[in-house]
Amino acid sequence: MNEQAKPAQVPAVGNDYWSQSRRPLASLLFVAPLLVIYELGLICLGPNAPRNGADDWLRQTLNLLGFNAYFLLPILTVGILVGWHYVLRQPWRVSRKVFYGMTGECFILAVSLWLSWTLYRFLLQAVVHTVGLSIGNFLGTIISYLGAGIYEELLFRLILLNLGIGLLAWMRAGPRASVIGGIVLTSLLFSAAHYVGPCGDEFGWLTFFFRFLAGVLFAVLFRYRGFGIAVGTHAFYNVLVGLSTLA
Image 1 (cartoon, rainbow, N blue to C red):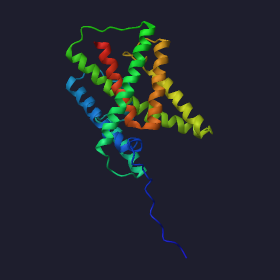
Image 2 (image 1 turned 45 degrees about the vertical axis):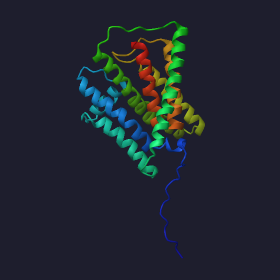
Image 3 (image 1 turned 90 degrees about the horizontal axis):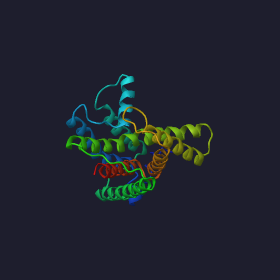
Image 4 (image 1 turned 60 degrees about the horizontal axis):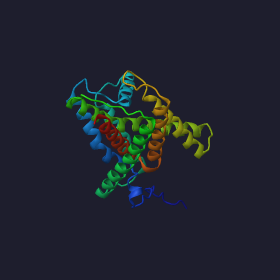
């Protein structure tokens, strides 16, 4: 006698903050205001507004594929997170308390990383002073830092890290080796990307090493705390660095 087919069960999600904040829907709703501020800020500042490198590379890739609509990239970002959440078949609601917790967690992590960078820079006696910036340049720089937090995490963690782990697993690396290898490889790419292009920094092994370590931190946050926490920490850290540098 054939049993009646049972409907697929929705994977259980813990009610605690650490489980809820990792969900793609929580990441989407948390990142959405940053994404709106970045995109609207670029429009308000005009065509000469500084654009984040990862943003520019992703748009160039889309243009090469024949997709040159301006808002396609943020729409794809939202679509990836919505699709990810749909595949997991989790509830379509998030408690407001989760966003308060995510904001606090990202701020604490960002301040910790910023303090590490400040101490690192002090020990290397490599303090950079920037003076004479106009209000437009100041706002453009801060908005660019927000974009870096979003699109660098989209490119290096959400896309490349998952691809790297999947590729290493396909090459029969063990689960732990795949994750570690993916984190190391994408963190090296993340650090190297800061020295590419006309807006890239002058290469230095000490700054490269710190950015590699920061990439490892963001990758670990993405892997174990979710996309939203990685983006928020990255964006808050960039703003703190920018404010301290522009002061």
